[in-house]
Image 1 (spheres, chains in turn brown, green):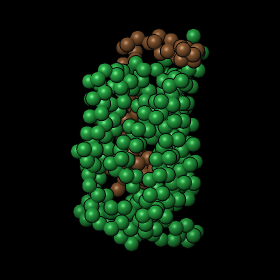
Image 2: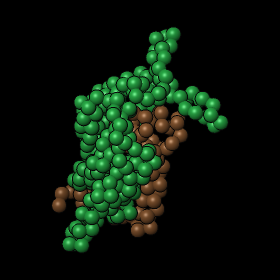
Image 3: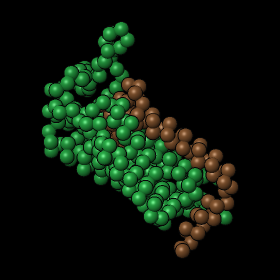
Image 4: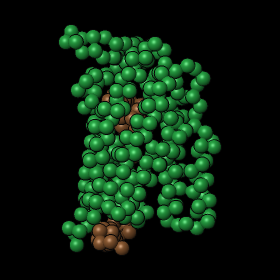
Length: 62
Length: 241
């Protein structure tokens, strides 16, 4: 096993399970809000502002 | 330590989002703009006009409450439109990076430089390739089924494919392999909302070029996102220890 993998895993495993759950849930919520806003929201300002991104990322757009 | 996850996700999103924006600007957006020139032929979707300063753009026209015609805000072609696209790219990239980071935390699988490209490839399969297999990348003006039904199918396909990938990373037991195959195949057996059988205003060569260009661009995006995310995680945990 190479050294980079080992150091990253030791940093990762220094977190307790509850810390990981809190960090994971926060990241998931924030990530989904960002994706919903850029990729899915029906509001015309969000749709028109993110229009080309939606087409380019393969989100259903029109 | 939470801060490190968010910082790594945001920085990786910045790198991947900017590279993707550059490729998009030259290879993808020109196809969207070209397709929009055909849109008026089939649909009465917007109204193009030229301003006194020579800039030309299209206002989307929709019916507001009570049937009143409302002129929608839309970024002006040129710098404004490009800036909004780059901003939306970066926000979407941050969203995808945070979802990867969340899965890593919750499933207890670290993202490292060594496995970052694999994370990126998984992201590409889950969020780009699997949805595109049923809903081909769509240019403005192409006929398409009901928007909400397509969004539901898109999300369902990403969830099912993502669950399959996670399952296979966790265990290679025969039941898991069988379940993963079912999860990957099921959305496509059920089928994406059908494309209405009406002629497209967009020339076929433009549509095929667009499909290839978007999948190529998103592949680059995901590989950079995974690799940079992993590299930063390695850096941050090394500076901790």
